[in-house]
Length: 216
Image 1 (cartoon, one colour):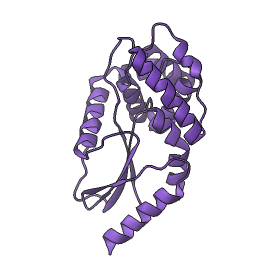
Image 2 (cartoon, one colour):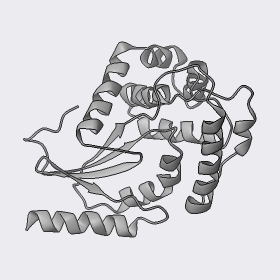
Image 3 (cartoon, helix red, strand yellow):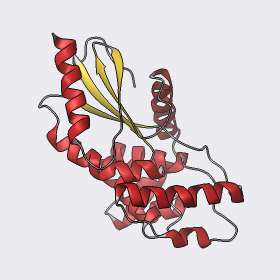
Image 4 (cartoon, one colour):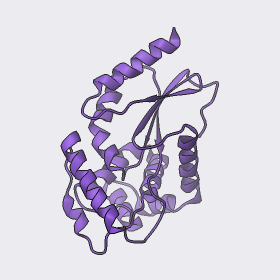
């Protein structure tokens, strides 16, 4: 995916990973923000990725770090977590790219990437499902109405993998350093928007102020 010079004058880009716990915490704010954005401002969602494919159990220090992160997000963002996820032995692997590809597959098949990303989040954070597992992702897709065979084929395809690589490459070129990230692209120039949890008003104000400033 590229940002075409002959495209819209302004675009809002959201970079995320469904297995990024701060992205999950930001979800209510993001949904509220989208409902209030200026009319005609296109929104583009990019799948980043915290960790490449792996089947190696997560180191215990990483498990402890993520446990504390979940507790902090739960307190800050007021979203629920099922902490029994960390009772697994051995620990789950540190891998998220496959869940990103699953969102891309759902978008390519039926334009349902965002909804499937939310289903992955709910399954992971609330239902303790191992959403880094290929068959678990296919189960979730089938559960919400996808043909399992078609989804499985898309998820394992080189085409979906290539789209993810392209999106990650674009995020890197935009100098995205963490998830979630928001950037306003105006006349091919990128302007980072500060992420604020718990309310969309200040983010919306930042976006509107930047649009006015750049159009003046």
